Image 1 (cartoon, one colour):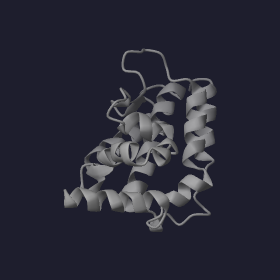
Image 2 (cartoon, rainbow, N blue to C red; image 1 turned 90 degrees about the vertical axis):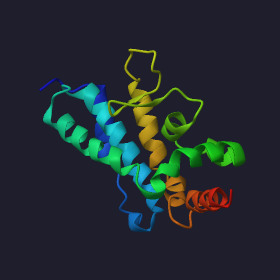
Image 3 (cartoon, one colour; image 1 turned 180 degrees about the vertical axis):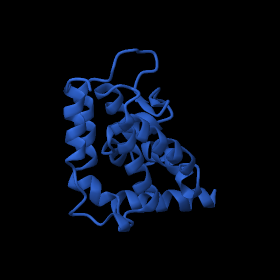
Image 4 (cartoon, rainbow, N blue to C red; image 1 turned 180 degrees about the horizontal axis):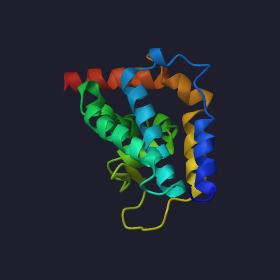
Length: 170
C-alpha cells in the first residue's frame, strides 16, 4: 500500500460525514440521486489520487459508478443538468448557492465533467485537482442549509418541481 498522502486525509474527511440528523428518504429523489452520485465521483477521484489506480477500493468504486451512469439516464434524473442551467438563468442567487461541483459539472458553459468516472475540472490540464478543492467540495455538500434544501419541500426540491412543471408546459 502507498504511504498515506493528503488525498487520503480528504477521503477520511468525506467518510466522517453523516446524514444522521437528516431523513434521506424524504429528499427529492432526483436531488438525492445526484447528491450521492456526486459524492461517489468525488470519492473515486480522490481515491485515484490516494491509492494505486488498480486498488480494490478503486475497482469497487468503478463498478458502482458504471452502474450509476446508466441509472442517471432513467426517469426525471435526465433533467438534472437542464435544471441547473435553468436555475442559473431564472434564479441566479440560488444558483450561486449550489455546491461548486454541481455548477462546474452541469453548467453548459463549463468545461468540467466526469471523465472515466473521475471529476475533471480542466480537460486541458494534466495536473491533479488540488486537495483543498475536495475538502471544500465535501463541506459544501454537508452544510445544514444545503441538506435541508434537498427535501421535497426544501428550496431545491420546490425549484425542481417548478422546473419540471414549466418544462411540461413548454
